[in-house]
Length: 188
Image (tube, rainbow, N blue to C red; front, top):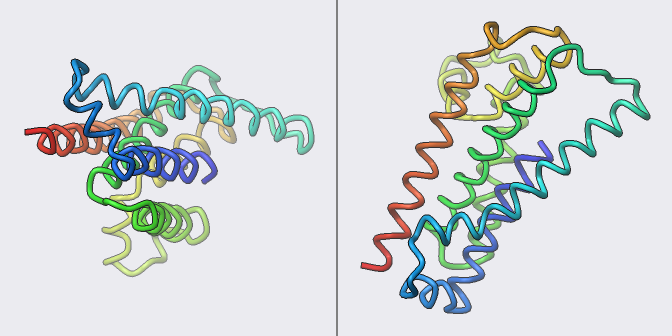
């Protein structure tokens, strides 16, 4: 939840801030490619979120004796893909909005509600109405929770959760792809 909120909100606000100040237009007419601008705007947030995940896992281990039963490697691959999806969602929001207030509200609305209500974190997905069960498939947090529960609590390997990795990667590719195209269209 912390990773999703921080990655989406920080990314969407940073790009919209550049649009409001007019510096995004200056960057778009520079020699930099759209992909390079997006990488420059998101890599720092990716690193911060990865460090936050290390801190959360350390605090969980030290204070609550929560250990990871499965592979650290697959857990961090899942965290990385999940963060790419979250950053893609933040970029998508920022490409569709023109003010920080709207970007903030859209970020909260598209992360807070799905993270709590549609991911299976609070309520089991099987007990939801059919419409919400279908909508839960659009929440990338749902797939991330399956991986985290499997790797951390059950100690399962990649073969048990590989489908979740695929869904998270598809979500990341779609959101990042649409964001890049939307930002490129602004320059044409």
